[in-house]
Length: 405
Image (cartoon, rainbow, N blue to C red; front, side, top):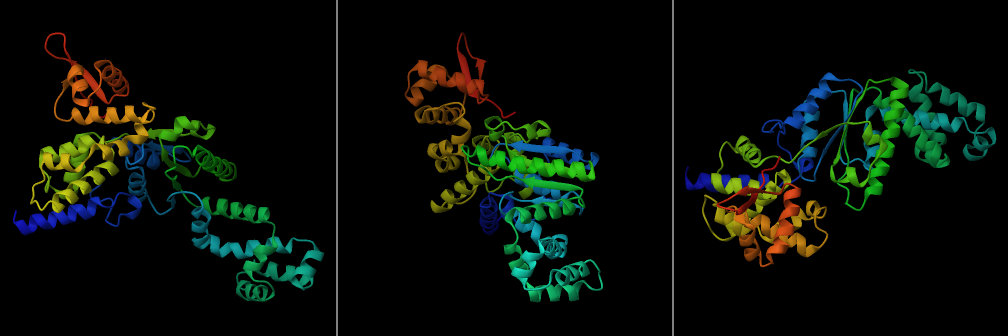
């Protein structure tokens, strides 16, 4: 490969790795997607079951949103895909054709059902005349003319302000239900909540449960829901609705799967070597977003130092600091170690084991702690399958990194 081509690949890979979220990615998502077994399983369920409630759960950065986008692209047209469910939900609904076509009529119909005195005082028109115009909205050949007349009396915006907020919310829910009854799949990507924000997670699940129950009662099991959310919150905020779901866990990819994903996209390991790309995958602990971030950081550091490809394992180690690893592993290690010093020591153990298996005594020396402290840290890491023990020479046990399940 010529130097010019190497430089071009370096630039292309950097741009690709700089986009860490599925929402910001513009390339054809299906073209180079690595289909892991959990995503294949969800697609099978979607295509072969009707009226089911499926949850795809996983740690932050494991590719849940990307998986949802791929699944959406693999389904037909009768679907709604909601990115980062929340305040923007109703705004998205109001952009849909069905909602726009029926919202104005629903608002005027609600206004016409107010008491005569209310209509007379607020609209300055005889109630019987106003109700006649609203009834004309039901006739296709009279709808446009009736709508123009109504808008001259009271705009839709003002009509909304005249109505009670609760009545408006009920109207929105009613229209939403009718709109969603027309679809086969509803795909919901819940936001990345803060670890301490279990309340918002529960509130969103409450709303989705009401929506699910309403659709099941009114139209029967015709619509399949797929809801994507963080695994970290399942245990922090148990919810009755989760118990109804068919849960599929999107586990972190194994190191060789991350490498395979890269090769699928680029057809080669360049500008890295096989060893350096594998090291990046190991450091990422199976989290795809982290994998992209570390690729980006490695290329940045490599170019800043004026080097030319390939990027070796030593270049990766120089770019990915212990502070970066600690920051990225903060969330998952918080469930194991409460103290910041313990988390920092755990990260040192994991980075130290990247090169080769070590005895407990060697680890204690390298991270500058007592052997007893090292033993407690290793035991905790072993319990959560970060490391594993194998028999070395004699009575010595060797500690090595455990493969990601």
